[in-house]
Image (cartoon, rainbow, N blue to C red):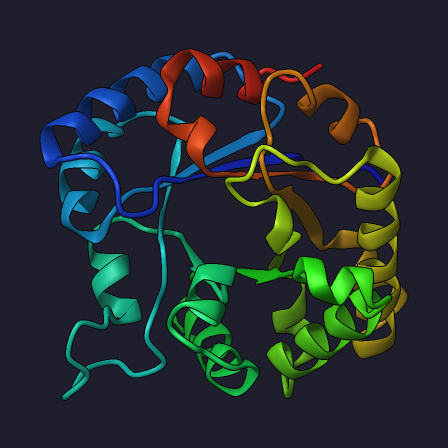
Length: 251
């Protein structure tokens, strides 16, 4: 089954509001002729409003870099699903390795975030991935399976088709190292197998699985040629207009 590709840019904690607008305008232009794929960008929360304005009338989708499990309340520094929706977001990144390893978010918390996003019609991009130590200990697949099973716990079948998964080997994020095509495809195929077990084969065949981890113009074509890789979650390269343009227009 051919799934519609998704190229997503995670800007992380970078760029001023003015810089964000300038980059968004460049990406809006880049994506104008990419009609057979989706393009999404996730700026810092402080820039969402300005970027939403810059993207008006374009095909580029907007996402938050995280989302709280509560609608409102005493949750200092969190951002709720309705807040993201009000700013024009249709996606929310959840469980990024930096949230897991720097801010110690566990699978239970991440599961709450996933379900909150879905409940408010936001598409969660659930990030999974192993550290270098876990890969060298041959624990890659058990780690991915636990992150999937716990992160997607108690999701209904109708909700399942609304999710996106992003496989990001932690050792490849921002390091310049990229999983080989074979390593990436193996992890993606395994992910789809677990999704079929959690939900059902038909649902699993519809879920888009992105690759993230030092995606760049030199490796994107080969990565995207793999059977189970449906797009890319791009970090540093998403901050450079020409570089991201080339990734959007992968062959």
